[in-house]
Image (tube, rainbow, N blue to C red):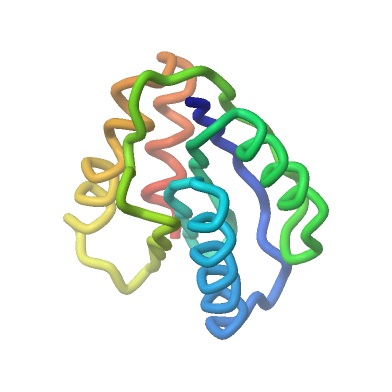
Length: 135
């Protein structure tokens, strides 16, 4: 199994409808390929975790990198894992916005902790924390 984490900048003016299209497409595609993951969106940027068979994850990342709805992809992590962090999620979208309560970003951070915080390098943790709290 492979886990891949990347960061990107959303296209300006990305609508709620486009986000929903991304999610619907991702769920269908990922289920057909045995890929699972989490997509975080803070209003400006995406942070996505993809997990599955190495070939499937790498092929999907290549496809994602050509999507014009975002730019500036930065691969944060690509490493083998023993077990999926999100085995029941074809893809799950979490939006982080200014209207969320104080505890919501922390809850999101805890929910993503298995794949992000617990297994991330010390230099990656501040970036992840900033992403989760950026509005």
